[in-house]
Length: 201
Figure 1 (cartoon, helix red, strand yellow):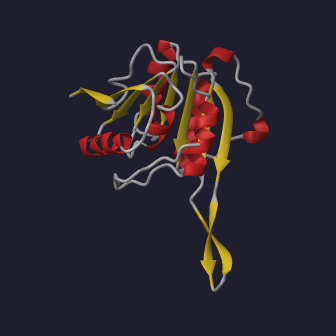
Figure 2 (cartoon, rainbow, N blue to C red):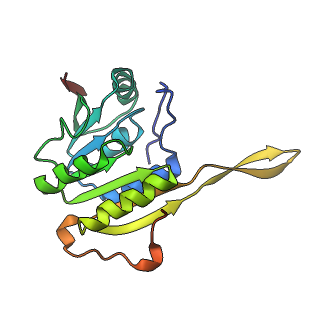
Figure 3 (cartoon, rainbow, N blue to C red):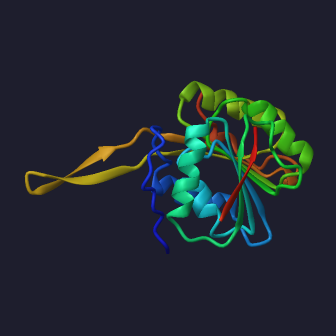
């Protein structure tokens, strides 16, 4: 597996590698997919998606972060056609996308509605805040598309006096929607808590 290089910092830490591994599993991308990311930030998810999907559209509302996405893309190898879009979603979401990743919670309900209306097959959303996770789970459930909820927490080891201790990262809540499956398959026992070109303004 090729390592993802992120030499440029967006001053908003990238999604951790272990979390990205789960994200990619849930996205289940293949070369026929048009992958769309809302909130590309460092471009970590964008880079890895561009190694599996045939086409990638990455939206970012902050111009400096979009520049970081572009710079980090340039530091990596990938095969997809990639478009970087400076826009605040739901503006800029392409109508022909297949898979959507929401890396943040801003405007997630209108984004979700646009993606569902456009017929996206799979939607994954990561949330860092407990209260937002609960509200997002409610929004997915109300639309009848909530397939899975996950809470991911990773602890990484470090040397402490010649032994190993662990530093825990904050948990990430992940919501997975599969609109094409019809009724939600989620069980109550997994209830969630409470070569790039650019377009856009």
